[in-house]
Length: 252
Length: 260
Image (cartoon, rainbow over all chains, first blue to last red; front, side, top):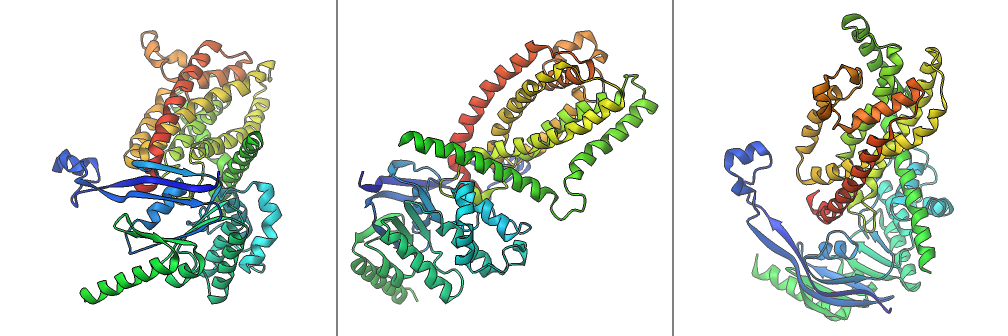
């Protein structure tokens, strides 16, 4: 199988509720149960079709609310599409929810172990990579302190470092290349490049068109849940930037 | 190839279960001076008050009442605590639900097992009580793992339903609180089943905890093997409930991420 991800006519629908939808039974009784029903459905994604061959880096761009993160989530197995087909071949790892399961009262060390396992490593794999994870996050000094004593940047670095050491076959990246200071960001990009060289399939969602241009083999431009363009990075990014420029000038 | 992956998967799930339970237990008492001892002190405090009330205020005249009561309390607390926090197993773990590839159905198992560990940790104290009251342990103890397995199965089958419903219907937790409060009085935790009028027994016996608590008492206090019939029926019904609950849970799980 040479396709890592196959998406065909994919559609994902969300409910939209009335703004006075009752939240509790008491409110429902008072205002009538009719208001519990969703007013309408809106398609966050519709008629999405593309394939990602093994080892390709696919970029996804688009305005806020275009469905980028929803698409990434679906590929990661979060939620289920209402329409179409979605096949994912390979172990999926994500730089989506960094530091899932982190707890401020646990030490850095304890958090690395729990989070590493939550991210899909076995206990032995975590132990083997522990030193590397801590070194990468540059937290050798603080690793035995409770997480609550860490700065936001330190937490993000630790979360990124764990996720980046899980060696997935398909890597999902959602706008997290903004972790830490510039030096650390560079390190993150290098890490993703390493994955790329090793033949890992990568899907990147980003607003940073420079990074997209630099990294991706192909780019999808999503607009209001549909594919506006899908082509080489230079072409699509140009189109996208022109469209954004236009929007800015027409709507002051 | 396939079998290797499968095995890795099982090892992985075991590690995940273990670490999540350890995390649970560490967090529950981290930054408290007495730590894990609290999980033992709680039932002991309950024991003290109930023993006082039902020995001096409203005497029930049950021989070796503290041992009798402690057995019931341990079984009931495992049940109550697992259901209470099991109902919140999904709601309180938003970040895990949103993680690609995370096996969501493990969460109800984590809460149930974590309170099972508390139950097991309390057993030495129960044995201490038995020695204190000169109740000999008999060979019936070998039936203990079976009774614990039945209770585990019963609890987990309910937790799958509760955890999934709580996501969209947050009243679940409050309803559950009421049901559990009533359940405490409708189960023979501090009184003996023989106080129930014969004509009410058929209804009273529909409560599975009646038989589960009874089984523990048979083992520890009477030194006899528990009556097997009701336990087998409970296992059977729980197995069906577990299958239904698990199916329901898996269907609902696709909505979890967008409901949290």
